[in-house]
Amino acid sequence: MIQDSFTLTFPHEKFYASRNNFAPESLLVSALVYSLAVSISSNFIPLILVLILPVMIVCVKKFQVSSLLKLNIINLVMIITLALTWPVFLDGVKMGMLITLRLNMIYIVCEYMIFPLGITGIYEALYALRVPEKLRVLIILTLRGIFIMRERLETALISVKLRAPNLKGIMKLKVFASILASVLLQSSSHSERMMQAVILRGGFTGFSQSEREGLKLGDMLLIVSFMLYAAVVMKCNYI
Image 1 (tube, rainbow, N blue to C red):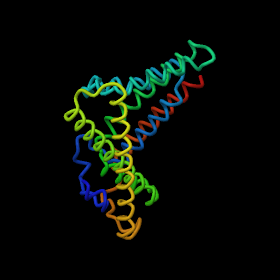
Image 2: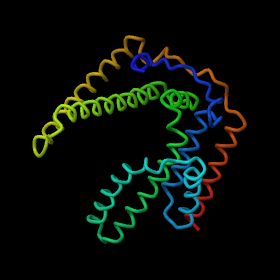
Image 3: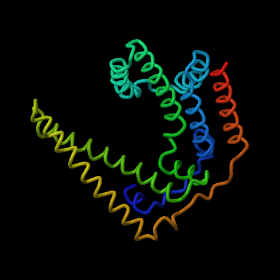
Image 4: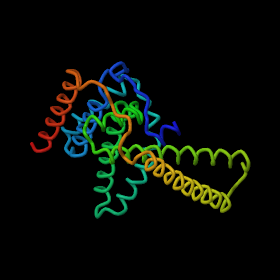
């Protein structure tokens, strides 16, 4: 994968033979349409409507609810912050709960529809949607850089736990700060090398492109169904 990040030549995958049998671009567009519908939902009826899909995914596809733990820990901090800074305490709590519900719904749908595509699928989806080439490459490089930074941080933390398991107090904070600074510097250096590799290989042209077929009937039906779903939700917000 490291080599792929420098060359941007992704292995060809037959997504129509995957578990969802839909083209990556249809999944990406559908998830974005759903996320838009969730983002503008604030009344009771629209929220119930957009909640149907995540509940179906959790129940039918055996979604791991434990994966929401870290997200909701951050949401808890956000709720407390809103409650303390909102003009009315209870209104701040309600707004925080609403945002938390929206984030959870969007995360569940994206985890099921978008995350399994991986970098290859996302790149093919962006290409099929005619996203400008430079923006496509920058998105992929950014995603890869985030993954690399996370891997390095986890490796460094494991190394510290094995070598100094009894770190406590201010020393533990100092070590963590040093690790974080080191990872950021290494990631910055790696990003510069990735950019140099792109330039040496001809800039943002000449990369392998998708050669898949166009959208099939099932893909069109998926997009249309999500658009109708979103339209009903938007309509309910203004009734």
